[in-house]
Length: 240
Image 1: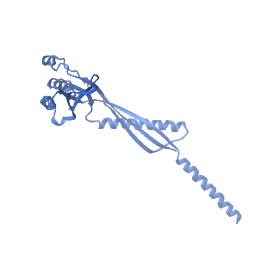
Image 2: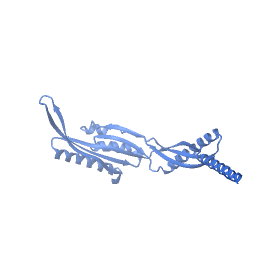
Image 3: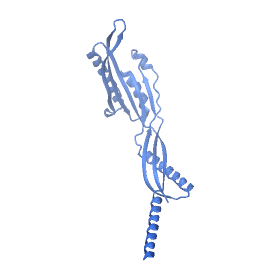
Image 4: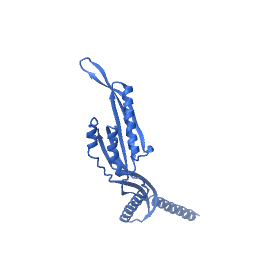
């Protein structure tokens, strides 16, 4: 009877040992990362520009601003920019002021009205022409110019495939170096980064008071360049 009990206990210990080994075996994993980047040519441009007016009378200053902005929008629409591609980014009215050291008081100056719009140019080769046209029509500040890509889905898929392939290659190398074999993927997560080229501009129309000078100014050269779409993945593989 005692031998039977001892045999049962020994078998139980052996099964427990196998269970522990299997649990440890199941927990053997390798974590890796992979990155894939694809470069695509930009085919759109986004322009952000403003009409800024100043004056003593807030109503007159606002009316002047509205007249100039209307002229800007009408001009770019006549050039082929669709209405839905023009949107107001910011509109502000405030009175400028400065501190007078002699009187020790805050002195209020002219009113400043700013109307900022965003213009999407779907034909990138027209971006320079639209900028020049807007400045000639009344805009007096160009804040930024960015480029984009209309369809990025194919590039995203390519970048994703490259990232996964790189992660799997790293996992295979690590598994082989440790004497193990690569198993199934336990988890995978993705991170995307779309790096579109951006041109920072602060181009104020200093010659706005001289129409002839504006008309004779050299055209603004614009080159869209390329955009880079990068996707990174973090993956956890099982080791066998």
